[in-house]
Length: 355
Image 1 (tube, rainbow, N blue to C red):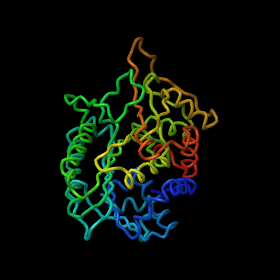
Image 2: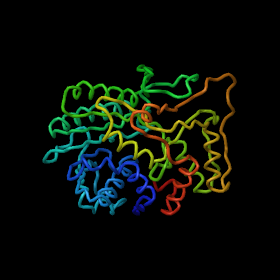
Image 3: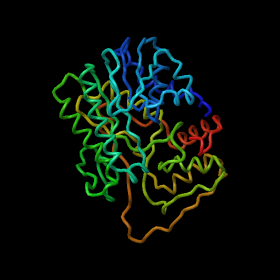
C-alpha cells in the first residue's frame, strides 16, 4: 500500500480562515476522536495539525483506530506527528486511555451500504454499542464538548414534495425494514446521548450529515459521486445504475470540516444541525458535471429509463438553522469541489481499486 499525499494547503488554509477565532479556547487542550482514519476523520486530523501548527496551540488529539499499523502505511505523515496519539481498539469496548479529555468527536460509524444490507444486526450493534461505550467515556473523562456525527438518514424517506428536509421534520425510517439498521442506529444514538448527557456538564452537539465530495471519498462504494469520479479517472463511461432522476446535493469536504469544527465549538448543547449543501441536482446532472471536470473524456451511461408517474426521490437538507444560528454557509461550488477532488486523486495516481 502506497501512502497518500497530504490534503492541499489551500483547503487547510480555508478551514483555518473560517474557524481561526474559535481555537483559542483549545490552547493546550486534549481531543479524543473516533473514526479518525475514515473520510471525515482524515479531514479532521489534517486540519487539526495544520491549525495546531499555525496558531501554536499546543493541543493534542488521541485517535481511536482498530488498526493503527495499517493506517500508518497510508498516512505516515499523520502517524509520525507528536500531537496525534493513536489508541488501538474497537468503538464498542476499547480501553480508556489515561487522563481527562476536553473535547470528543464521535465519527466512528462505518457508512457501509453492503454491511447495512447483508448484516443489519451487526451494523445496528456497532452503532448503538459504540455510542453506549463512548457516552461512558465522555462521563468518565469529564469531557466538556461532545460532537456526534449523525446522519440525514434519521429522517427516513424524504417526501417527494419536500425539496429540502429541515431539523424540524419528524419523519423516521421504516423500523420494519432490516436495511433501516444504519438510520435507526443513528436515531437511537442521538436519543441515548440526550438521555444520559442532558443534565451533565458535557455540552452535546449533533451534526446530521448528508452527502459530500472531496479527497479521500471512497471511489468504489455506494457514494454515487465517488463512483462517477472513479469511472472518469479510469477512462470508463460514467455509469448511472438507476434512471438518473433522484435529487442529491454535495458539500465539499473542506466546507464540511469547517462546519464540524464550528458546531463542536459553538453549537448549543442538545442541538442538531443538518450538514450538507442545499444545491439540489439530479444524479444525471451530477454525472455530467463529473464528465465536464474530466474535459468530456468520459461519456455518461444511464442504466434504465425513468418510470412514468414515479415519485421523485430526494436526499437534500435545509441548512437554514446552521446559517442563522452559526453563520455557516457553502463556500466552494460543486464544479470546483469536483475539480479539486479529481485533481487530488490524479496527483496520488489512485484508481478506483486503490481506495
